[in-house]
Amino acid sequence: MKLALIGATGYVGAALLEEALSRGHQVTALVRNPQKLPQHPLLTAVQADVHDVATLSKQLRGHDAVLSAFNPGWGSADIRQQFIAGSQAIVTATKAAGVARLLVVGGAGSLYVAPGLQLIDTPNFPAEYKEGAEGARQLLNQLREEQQLQWTFLSPAALLQPGPRTGHFRLGGEQLLMNGDAPAQISVADLAVALLDETEQPQYIRQRFTVAY
Image (cartoon, rainbow, N blue to C red; front, side):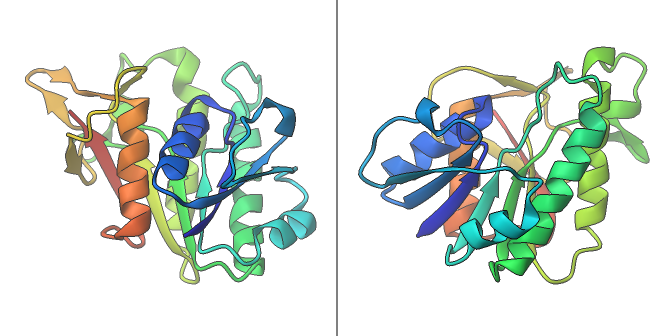
C-alpha cells in the first residue's frame, strides 16, 4: 500500500513508520523536520505543515490511506487548541485529496471506565495530560459525525510504554482494558502493529478501538 504518515518523527509516529516499512509499504512521511528521518528505499520524506490545508491536500493525494500520529507536544500551553486545529486541518486535507481512509492515533482518556464515565473525567486523571486528552476526545466526537471519510480512531491502553514488538495483544472497543484491578498497558511497538493490522484488514470503519496486553 501507499501510505501517508503524519508525525513520523514522534514517539508513536516513529513506531508506525518502522512497522509500515517492515511490512513493505511505500511510506510518505510528512514531518516538520525531514532531516530527522532515516534513509530507506520505501520512504519518501516531505516537509509539511498540517495547518496549510491546500498544500497538505496535494501532498496526500494518491495515497491509499492517511495515518495520523499528529501531536503538537505535551509541553504546549495550548495543546488542546493546537491538537484540534491541526487534526481538523488533517481531516479537511484528507477529504480534499480524495483519500477515503484516515486512521488516527488518539488518547486513552475518552475510554469508558463505567457507564457514562470516561477515564478523563475520573478524579485521579493526571492534570498534566488533561488538556491533550480533552483535545483527543473532542476530535473523536467530531469524527463520529464524519460521513465522507472511512475513519478509524485508535485509543492506546492507559499505559503506553517503550517495549518490544510481540504481536500479541487484546483488542477492545469503547471500554478501558484492564489487567485485573489495574489499567492494562501496551508497548508503542505493538500499538503500531495494531494500527497497521487495521490499515491492511479494516475491522473498525467509522469506529474507535483500543488495544492492550
